[in-house]
Length: 225
Image (cartoon, rainbow, N blue to C red; front, side, top):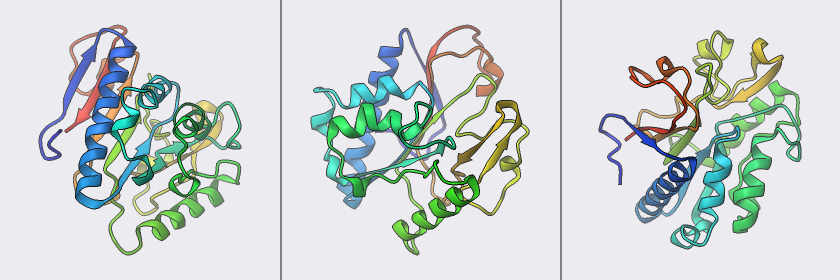
């Protein structure tokens, strides 16, 4: 299992399928360790199109039996301002390819209410996180992040106001380049190092993942161990 205090690594795979299997294996390892240590596994899912294959692999016959799903709690790193049934909903993607196939109980699903006005949805999710974690630090055991071609992750787009937010944990972020608002979950949630996996099927601008030396289409996992 990855050591949360070591430096990050970049894993490159020949196919999206190979990347998805590695991401699923990492998910399982973190889930098993968290459940053994604390009795539950709190995971933050990413949106966009990349997770679809990963969700399908996780829900498949190889990996699904390896996790005590009743002890897994699902959160989201961001959401679009749309209803949960909308094609663009990050929740809908996870529900269709992961949560529903696994029969995850509603009380283990902690979605951002994208159908509400963005400011209200952000405030409600922040309160929900407070209710869930109580006075303890907001401790997530694994955070999945996507990586956009413009370098954005979790709806934290370049040059947008949410990047300067220091207090709110969930914000309604104006994204002029997309002509909409988004609801990112700020990841300054505790002082404890959190395992991060940034998942990207296509890397066209390597400057966005540090000092990468390749250019072109790659299947990658950028993982902070």
